[in-house]
Image 1 (tube, rainbow, N blue to C red):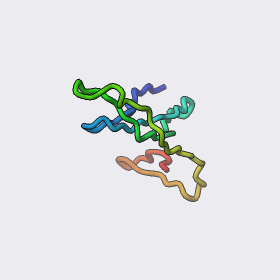
Image 2: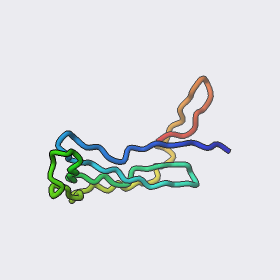
Image 3: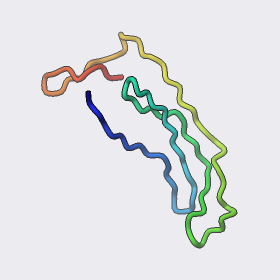
Length: 88
């Protein structure tokens, strides 16, 4: 059994406090961490010169929908002459 530690980006913000948040769905059985949602248009007043009243949650989002790829569309990658498994 293998154990992995995954680090995933959850938020980026620019110099003026605009934010993009990333939400993930974990599939523990397959060991997958899939991006499920991107929320944008948020604002964080995280600097001393910013008024806290400017903080607001994101009001726009994009939701990811995943489907199983047919076997004909899958490929097997090789690493060092050994099959590295099926990749999408």
